[in-house]
Length: 156
Image (cartoon, rainbow, N blue to C red; front, side):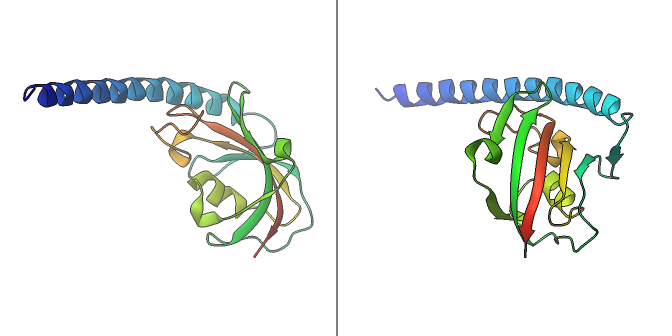
């Protein structure tokens, strides 16, 4: 009985290590696919790339106006997909806009929404480094490049 606990701990550590290794492998594959996607995407008409690697496309632009800051609270509608087109989250599909602080979300959102004015609609192409990095979140695999269509409804 005294040996059971150490044996269980060794088994648990082994499985945790194995899971982390698989995550690293998946992240590397997803990052490579994302890099290839972004390299092709940057050459498409209308795509703008920032110095951080965030790419965006302006889908609808209202008159120039105030833009949110990195600490603003925003209200948005969004539709998020992976580069293969699979939807992982969508306030549009739920039929309800969402509010949050820009300092509470992934770096790609914080940077991208600061480029927008009320009423604008952009499509963001967010490399893994500006999203969840090597981590996986819910149904978003580790190392994923993310695509979001975002409409900025309001901010303060």
